[in-house]
Image 1 (cartoon, helix red, strand yellow):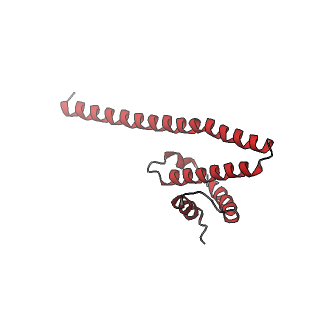
Image 2 (cartoon, helix red, strand yellow):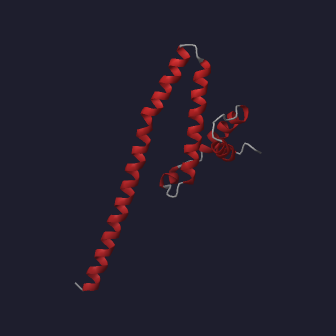
Image 3 (cartoon, rainbow, N blue to C red):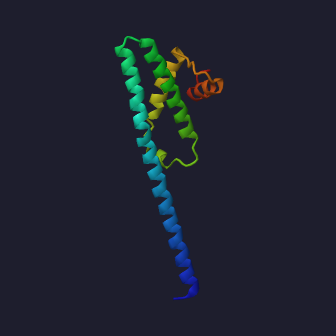
Length: 129
C-alpha cells in the first residue's frame, strides 16, 4: 500500500473515531443532564406538597413561581446553546407550550429579585408586546 494512502486512511479513521467520541460524549452529557435535575425537581415537589398539606398555599405558590422562572431561563439557555443536536428531533410542539407559559406570565408577572433575569424571561416570552 502506498504511504500516502496509508496516511490518508489513518487520518480518516482518526477523524471518524473523533466524531463518534464527540457524539457519544455529547449524548452522555445530555442524558446525565436530564437525569441529574430529577432529584432536584422531586425535592421542589416535596416542598410544595408539604406547604399545601400545611395550608401554606402562599409558600407553595412562591416556590412554584421561582421554579417556573428557573425553568424558563434553562429553556432560554438551551435555545442559545451552540450545539443543539437534539433539536433535530423536535416536532414544534414546544411553541404551544411557550405560548401557554407566556399567557400565565402575562397574568402573573415574574417577581424574581434579579431585574436582568426578569428581562430575559420577558424578552423570550415576548411579554412586552
